[in-house]
Image: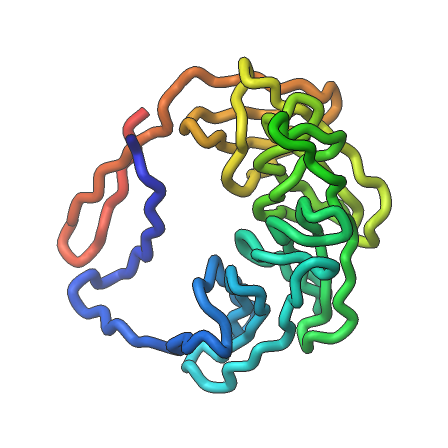
Length: 238
């Protein structure tokens, strides 16, 4: 099985200094997930329900919002999206029906708004009309795209879009098992095509114009890291 790896590639691989910018103590959050950078400020969220910011030198750590659970949503998943001083994200549970939310708030923590509450999922089929347990979003113009890990008409997850003002929610695709299930990572948008990944490590694409999904029967590519003097070279094997 190929595991996801996050790499930092620097010009000098032998002169890096590791620095802890902030240590979470529980009361300020726990289990931080992907962070984003805007200017000299890092923004992120924790699985325990906080949204935070910290300067790149480690100073000024602030919890700008605590997502209380249930109505607000719970268990924030994935990274945040920053656009025009607003942060967008998802929660994997909570909301009015307990199936997760899409939310936004200002970078100072004000004006927290649930843009969308996913509808109830009926066990053991895990089915509904729009999905549940959404994962990380991407933004194109004023439209957010995302994948839901479960739910949909077949209980196998969905791909969806929603406008940044909360209007226009559309389920772009319902997975049915034969074309994959449980999308578990963020999407990549190129032109009119969305690319993503399923739990079983197959890749898929969704053409928004025709709303179809094609399962690409291939294991995710692996890579080799080699050194060339003080530089690192990454070569992908396909």
